[in-house]
Image (cartoon, rainbow, N blue to C red; front, side, top):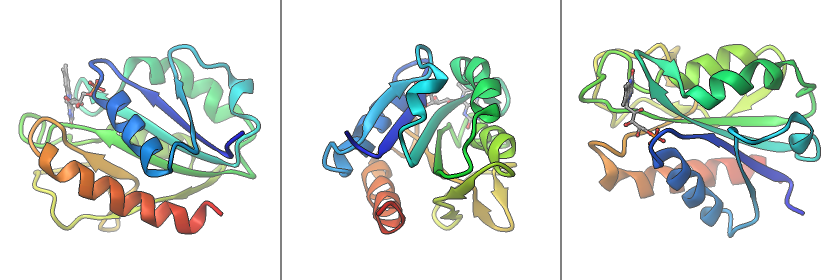
Length: 166
Ligand SMILES: Cc1cc2nc3c(=O)[nH]c(=O)nc-3n(C[C@H](O)[C@H](O)[C@H](O)COP(=O)(O)O)c2cc1C
């Protein structure tokens, strides 16, 4: 069994497809869970968690995460390393770009170790609460406008995580 779990919530499939690409970059050595059907006990065996969500509303969390986050954030995450990625649309939602990752970050940051922060360089948007002290609290991905940058962004991020997930 892998020690990496990728948990994702998706409304239109983009976040699922990115979650699968991340698994591929770990040479398939990661287990995938859709949060629409996960149970909290499922994640207990994993030391490393990668959490993926799309952004809905104005900077809101994807609906299935909205239901799961309260129980997830109450679980014992103290011995885990957690990384977050979020899908967003930096053109149509330029003032709330990928903010859903901040909702997850705020719910877990006191309870666990969050890793995988990302430099802001190369992103074009007006505003995002998910940028803290000049860095994204996870990886933003824009499949609506910048799908041609996704592979390189994922590879750089997973390379960063591989150094920590040992
Ligand atoms: C109703 C709606 C609201 C959205 N709100 C935001 C938003 O506030 N910020 C953002 O960056 N993207 C927003 N998006 C864009 C989605 O997050 C983006 O298209 C994403 O790739 C969808 O991923 P999914 O197919 O996994 O659900 C919104 C999309 C929809 C349909």
